[in-house]
Image (cartoon, rainbow, N blue to C red; front, side, top):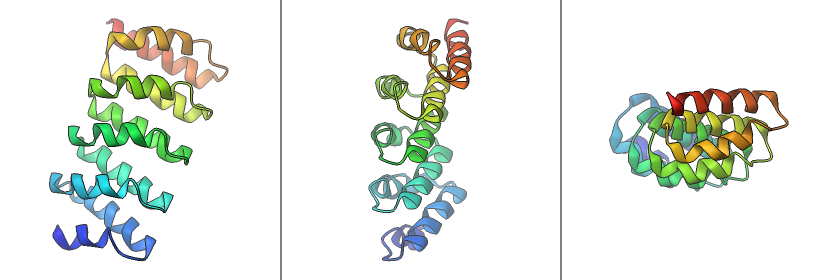
Length: 152
């Protein structure tokens, strides 16, 4: 575990990416803090693998850093961060996910709606109701499903 965590600091981004992926596959929660640090990596592919790994670990320590990742300049990372937050299902992510319902990329908005449905917090009902008018049908569908999950 420790040798892999150390590889997250390698000068070569491909090594950092593979180390993050391997840590996620191992599933050891000791990797949570090192992976959280990698969410600030200069390379988007390394950050992406860190988000994926944290999603699989489903550890609540990652909630706030993943909520911050919803503001990443790369839309794929924002999308994966929303998905990860849905897997973790922690209400601390609600406000960040509600903000993500306004993302310029529809895939991010869709994942945010889905995550809000998985968390099932009534505070998301109004923003999800507004998302029912989204210009993208996938977002509208996910918002409707999320409302159904929350109201059950």
